[in-house]
Length: 215
Image 1 (tube, rainbow, N blue to C red):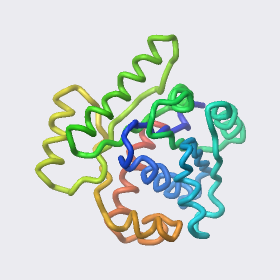
Image 2 (image 1 turned 45 degrees about the vertical axis):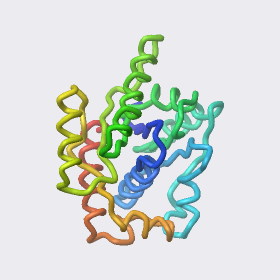
Image 3 (image 1 turned 90 degrees about the vertical axis):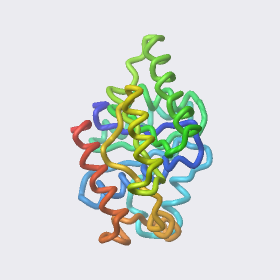
């Protein structure tokens, strides 16, 4: 059952974690799959995004915290949701540990900068710590480059450096594009509001790659 759970986790704010969570959930929902989005971040960025308009009003979106996250995920899986996407806080918290424990895949967004890489790498150590204490942790984890300038030297360098260090990355990326902010302002996503945009294509490619791990 945990193969249906996707957890987004990083302790670096502004990494694009919530953006990727909402956009992937909306993509699968638009394709007719039963999707639930869990907002486990105290800032409630995901719920605020959904409530900014009416486009995503019918997308199942549930708040969770340290005490409730396990029960919320279990309930959604028992109700046969095909995808459960969990957005976690931008800091170490018990809710993140539980979301990782229950995940089939953890995506770790990282912007192309040395500081962001160091912070994102801490997530790998956290997963290792969980497993050292007897937790299974996620079945798999992958870094995903976000908020990059496509084809830029720094983006290529970041990917090469991370791969050389032995970290696994998604082939798909989430570039720095106005479409993400524009559609968020109206409570939507590129898939729904700007389906011909580069951003919508990126999300479709990322969803297909993630499906390869979860299906």
